[in-house]
Length: 299
Length: 280
Image (cartoon, rainbow over all chains, first blue to last red; front, side):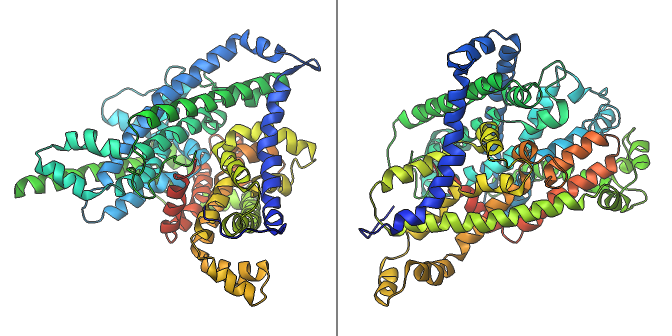
């Protein structure tokens, strides 16, 4: 930030006050409030909420579902987004139209996507089962089965997410100097070698950002579980976010809700820190990421 | 070598078309099904023929029904009002603060700006439930204020404005100041007219957030008077599970406005999302 004038007046403070007050009151304060509340049990400071939560089998089930959902979905989304972004980085006619098409699902809300896919995946009259029937595959229960529901939700969120993350990765790819590829090709490197040894390391910062942002979004995924499955069947899609929502608004058990939200916030902070360290540590050379490249250089 | 290159182009197009079909199919199917009757959808569901996909007798009945019978225009109208208010206040408060950060130097500037950056590293979804307690305390449940006010100050939007404003030469404002212009003169008469692109990007980002948000309106705005579109859509599914054509029509309406805005403003959209990638 280039600040130029030493102001001895109060003017800049007046200019920033509304924004800062709103940020502190509606963003920072609720978090502190929740941590404090989660540590309050029967009116006194204690770990009561957490010991109750940790003794609850449903909490551990829910944590497991959340971890499974993330461990499969996030790498899948990023891998596909990377493939698609490499594809739309190609220099062929009409590529702009394809980029636009691929991004379209990202303009939609998760609620719309969940509703459309839910009817398409209906076991009895859904179009996906009709298509499978054409291929002689028997109808699948999809979202009504405890073994398939979570994967169906992954499918839906992948459909929305790939185009969105593609846009970020494409912006990163655009910053890589084409001459680098040319010289590698002259040296006889194939497409796979170039991609693995040159392209991916060059967009490391963008990838790091996408990884962090995607993980946090997926950790907090809520709409499909609430709209389609209500956490079921047999709690197979009851992620932590949905458990927190239920604790507050269905069971009216604020202590449990506060404790779950506190756990979620800690997980998010932890994941961000780990990913950040991992990716920033690996032989980082500042300034090599390309000008304006999406990354996390400001943290 | 030339033949190899041709083959490569063909493969690229094949891949592109395959992904395009996977991407567009649900959209196409939703729009096509919104133009048919429920009997028709169920009748031709199995086995798979062309009639499974395309309307035999197209009808706009579903749209008439959701708007007239189920008053779907109310959540649409509410969401437009909420988005407009959020854009107005969001642009004003964040751009003025960004002007303060970009064009002045003051004590505690760095820690205060760090606070802004920190605030947008926290995903909004993670604070919605804690935020509910705070907004409930203000008595703002089921009000437009409850929906809009907590989201007005946005670290990302503020950051966007600050980045844009700090590229202007200070001499621009110096000259105005010498001529006796106040900060408001230089801000509204000089800076704002020169910053139209960033205002468009910010407005689009705010609009998309509000039009597509689900969790926060679900918690804070349950009553039909203030209900927003995505919540109305999911309520609709809960109440009328078997009315598929209506569901598809309501989904199409909910998806349409962002889509229509996306085409003319594509450039600004992409600028918005990629600049949020520089955040941190």
